[in-house]
Length: 122
Image (cartoon, rainbow, N blue to C red):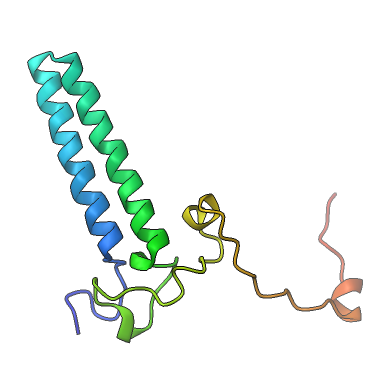
C-alpha cells in the first residue's frame, strides 16, 4: 500500500516528464523576468510549451493513463497503459491525436422512462 492508500494519483512517465519540463521552463522564465531578459522569457515559454507537447506525445504513446483510477496492478508510475495506443474515451489528448475509441452504447430507453416527465418547468 502506498502513501495514498488505494487512491490512484495518476503518476505516470508522461505526467512526471511534463511536470518536470514545465517547472524548468517556469524557472527559466522567472529568472528571465527578474533579469529583464525578453529572450529569456521567450525561451522559458518555449520550454513550457515543449513540456506540454512532450507529456502529450508520451500519453498517446501509451505512457500516460486514462481518466479515473487504474487497477492496482497498473498503478506503478512506469507501468505502460495497455489501452493507451488505441485511445481513451473522453480524453482530449487522444482526440487531438485522432484517436476516437468506441464508447459504450447507452442503455435503451424503456416505455417507463420515456413516459416519465422531465421535470416541472413552471
